[in-house]
Image 1 (cartoon, rainbow, N blue to C red):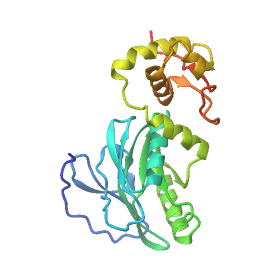
Image 2: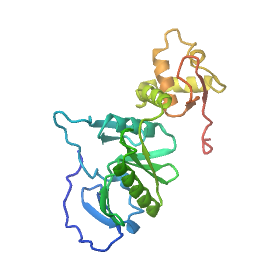
Image 3: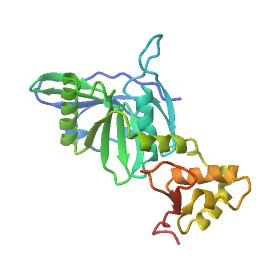
Image 4: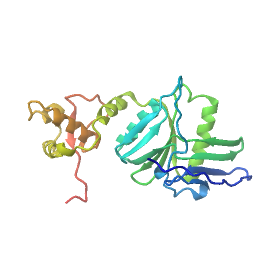
Length: 256
């Protein structure tokens, strides 16, 4: 269970053209920092800045997603946001990510504004990507475009990347959705992974990889697990089939 959030007094701000980040740290303590003091905050460890209510007739469908990359459960606001969580979880360049990490509170030439970014992404190289997920029908609307411009400007000030996304690429999503079902730890099936990786030192089809077993149900599941975790590589631009070519990823340079 997450720690209870603690409300604190927030400073009064009158200066124009300033940007603040309002968030709850890992212990649930409310924080408010100017942007130039917030760059080193590990927002991926913070509690969500807001909760998602559920009520009859709501347009979005909130829920929870277990992220294999960080072994954490994250709440999402819509199925579209859940799709992007899975895609980020699959991305080998992503170390971890968090949902609704903070609130931007700013003042610019158009007035005061606030915004809850959807996803905070920490890449494996330490860089940050902020992601907003929008219904594709809404992306072109002036209000949404203004919000995106403000958020992009704020991210430039913080040294972060920013993008607003709609529906993911259909082929990528089909593959990620399928492999996500096999992202959990192998446990008792772990020894099978060594056999599969040994057999895949040279490219071969999934069917050829599994041909050693007459009924390879467990071995097939382990194959998909290895593909999710990028230990078996393949062409992401093509549909996933039994004739899909796979090959073992190179061993890490530090490995003996």
